Image (tube, rainbow, N blue to C red; front, side):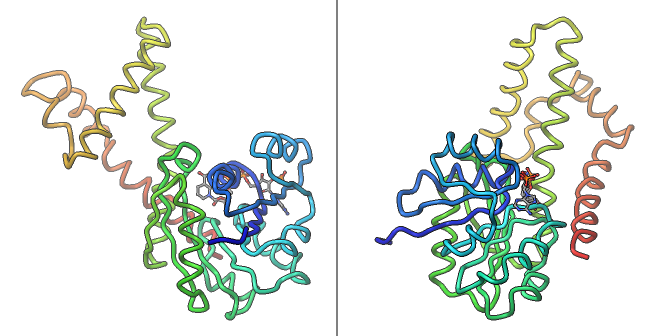
Length: 262
Ligand SMILES: NC(=O)c1ccc[n+]([C@@H]2O[C@H](COP(=O)([O-])OP(=O)(O)OC[C@H]3O[C@@H](n4cnc5c(N)ncnc54)[C@H](OP(=O)(O)O)[C@@H]3O)[C@@H](O)[C@H]2O)c1
């Protein structure tokens, strides 16, 4: 790609900013971002050296590609509110639960629409993004999409029916964070310093990451011995229903996606 493409991000919140962070490092693209809070926009402008505005129409009228980073319940009002400036832009939605069909109902079937589900790993270069596109999208749009997102994430195309599962995984990122925080705090409660506790928590994560990345499955078998401490903790977890709860968490996330679809 030789010419500079203009990318608009409407709703530069947590995920929108993570995407801006990724795209701002690619000189093929210039960015204009919006949200309603001016102070937050100033911070985004300073941090990523991008243009900012509170006016979504400005974003839409100037952009070749528009990333919709608002919450699912704000999506329709944003699309309808900018209708006057809809042209031949490529639309990318990251909204949980919002189907391509529901976006087509506002933008029309001829609009090129990609629905994707990133995770917050995009902030740190460890992201994964799954995506589906509508029939109007061309090969070129998919290439543009991948170029935009792959700076900080691995992209894969999937059937739209799988998107709620991927959303459950993006949510689980936060749930795991919460569990790890509880674990770290319980070590501190027991007497370790915060830095010692964090060092141990990080080792758990990095070792599991290494193990999975190198073809291993569940590291449990490498850690647990008969009658040992890991087995004792696992038995307690099973008795208390931890594994069942994890499966249920996935289902609860999916159910919430389905509610957001409506
Ligand atoms: N966080 C994640 O890990 C994650 C992962 C995957 C997908 N997502 C999806 O990403 C979307 C955003 O989630 P988030 O966690 O980033 O939420 P968030 O931090 O609340 O970001 C949403 C942003 O939209 C802005 N906004 C609201 N109404 C607007 C309007 N009319 N015009 C322009 N901007 C507007 C809000 O800023 P102002 O109040 O200043 O306007 C806010 O910063 C959701 O659809 C979610 O499903 C999030």
